[in-house]
Image (cartoon, rainbow, N blue to C red; front, side):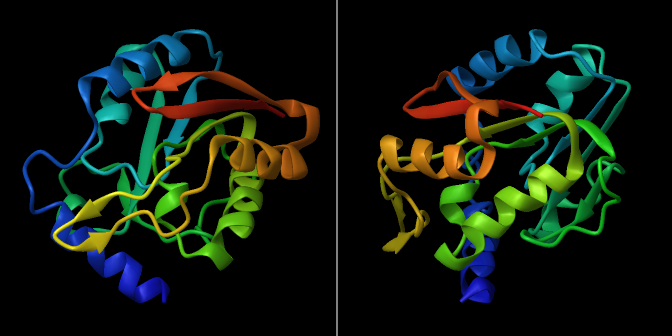
Length: 179
């Protein structure tokens, strides 16, 4: 269930090393440099590493959503939110990112979450997806992981020719959607 999946991350974020790797951060910084906009939303931001980089790159309005209570409040611009239904107005942010999150969702929330990203973004969506399971403490943290070509097919089903692969974030592929 969605509730069981959400509970996994309260435990995962107790691990100090659970979060964005340096390689992923560096690749995302390069991708963000190529995107125009003044407002940025990082959905399921974790510890907010990508929000920090968006600010450094000149995004004026930077916000995030998160499901782990312990991670909300560290940054006043992070609010509680669970995909596929975020309480944010339509087309509110120029750029919306979902980095290393889609594979964590229960399968029935995957496609509705892609439509939710479309609802939120004015210009650009960045999305990356894990292509294999990730086990931590005997628990699979990636219940919706699938091969890269399956992700690509799903993203093309939802966004058509607006979606293009960008680069890898470590082992995970990343796509850019220009709306």
